[in-house]
Image (cartoon, rainbow, N blue to C red; front, top):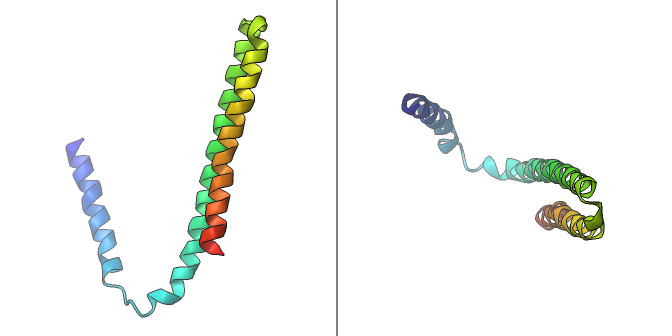
Length: 102
């Protein structure tokens, strides 16, 4: 395990060396494109994780309602509150992207 970690770190350092030797004058032109690419990746990651979290929350709520129908109202309230908080992650990511790109 330790050998594998050291090998990965060595490969990482070997691949990162040309980046440190890059010309800084040409870096200004391509700097803007990385903002767009990273914004797309961050929104994709946030949306994907929100989808997974919402699916898990709905599945757990459906199982809880099936096991205890008497607590259905409380479970439903907690589900809606949880879904709103989960969805806010994607919305905050979108706001940060618009602030960064715009």
